[in-house]
Image (tube, rainbow, N blue to C red; front, side, top):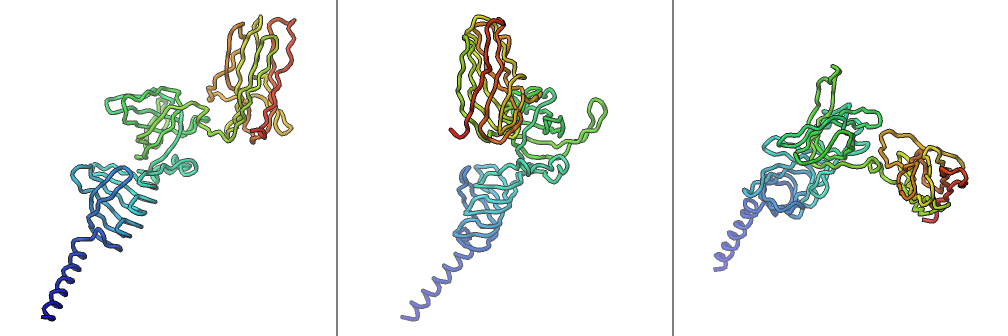
Amino acid sequence: MKKRISLIICISLIAILMMTACGQQNITDGDVKNAKLTLNFNFGERSGKYTGTLANGLPEGFGTFTVTDSENPKWTYEGNWKKGHFDGKGKASWPNGWVEAGTYKDDKIVPMSGEEVKTLYTETESFKDCCVEITGKVFSAPEYDQDGVSFQMWGDYDNSEKNTMVTLGDPKFEIKDGDYVKLVGFVRGTFEGQNMLGGKIVAPIIYSNECEVIEYKDLFAVIDEITVNQTINQLGYIVTVQKVEFTEKDTRVYVKIENNGKNEFDLYSFNAKLVHGGRQYEEQDDWNSNYPEVQTDLIAGVTTEGIIAFPPLEPGDVKIILDGSSEDYNERLDDYVYEAKLSNE
């Protein structure tokens, strides 16, 4: 009797071991092949087959996962994993040939930007299928069709260089010549052709899935700023310095003028001065900036606001000197002088 019980127990253990090896790959740690898994990604649950390494029943390290459930589009991800999520270098591909390659974090691809895309225009093919984030200035009339809009932009808008061909799959997106844009997209290859003058064009082709029109001032992150809000009123000619922003491109002084005086009021930005670190600076000319200008020859009852740009400076205390005058030379006005203290922020 004891022998029969022992035999039954042995057979049962063997059966359990066989089931674990053949039918429960999804909970086996270590290397697996075509293991059936259901994974909870940040974009939703997906079922499929996984080949690679598992830890605690989840993909870890390097592996390949292919969606097999009938309710969702099919795709394959091959790359690095962490606790069942895309994490690190990887590549996602679809049956229609679309490929997205790059670095992933929490199941989402992280666009390359800044120094990472420095060689995009000289080594375009090495970026093929990679996700990039770039900014530029549109320099030709966009072309629309039922599938979206295509346009050319300068990646280096200051020097009108680094031609870039962009296609955006949104026919309702509004964009025009001269706009500044910030986009995220995938490099699809290199365009080679000729311009209207017969010159050769070599440019990266970007298929964008995120694009926004932005103001020039938003192209450069504010490193630091001083909230000033100092107002000087002379004979009803009121000038307020609202704030000072320090960026890698320039130093911006925001000015508001209210003419509550009796005559026209003049305040020319090219006469403005800024003192910083014992040195004096004048207005910086930048034809690309399209900042709102401080109007002059301001008639009584009118208000204007604008930005006066100076060269880029290290954040610190500044003195701003503005030269204002009335059309009536009998109305004598002193300089409008403001002390902006970063240390008080």
